[in-house]
Image 1: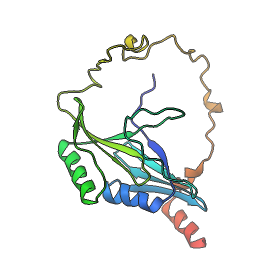
Image 2: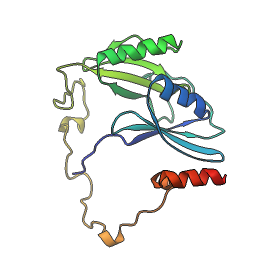
Image 3: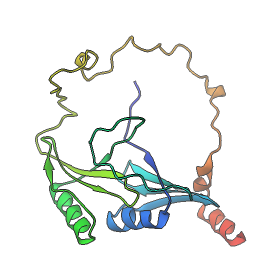
Image 4: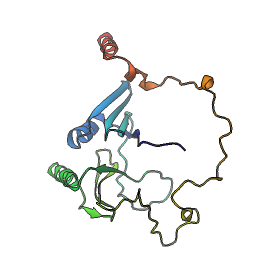
Length: 202
C-alpha cells in the first residue's frame, strides 16, 4: 500500500502575485521557498509546514474568483470548496484571528466543530480558507467516526481501503523503463551559482 506523507503542494491561481505574496508570506507568515517564471507565467511556492506547501500560478488574464462562502451548496460544475490549514495550538488560531482583524480582513468567529476549532476567511484571490486547531483528546484519524445518519453503502464498509474494486497491479514498470522527464522545476535543482549566472545574462 502506498504511504502518503502529506500534501506536497496545493496549486492555486492568481492574477496578482504581489498581493498574494503580501498575504501568504507577510500576513500569514508562510515562507516563500521557491519561484519559477518567464514572461506571462510564474509559479511560486509557500511553506505551510515541514512537509506541505501551497503554490500559486500567476497568469495575466486570471480574474478573482467570485466570493463563495465556505460549505454553502452550489449547483453546476464545481470542484473546490475551501482548504483548511492546521495550526499547532488554540493560541495560534487566536493570533491569526487578531492579525486578520488588525489588517481589516474579514474573519469569522471561532467555530467549535467537535474535533477542531476553526476560523474562516478569504485570501486576496477570494480563495476560501480555514484555519483549524485540533481539540485535545479527539483524534478522528486514530479513532475514525461515522456520524452520518444515512451513510452510503460504500461508506458503511469502514475507513480502510477495500480490496476487489479496482484491477490488481499485475505488471510493475521495470526499473530500466522508468523514465523521468524534465519539467519546469528542473531549474530549482541547479546550484545557486548557476541561477546567478542566468540572472546576470538577462
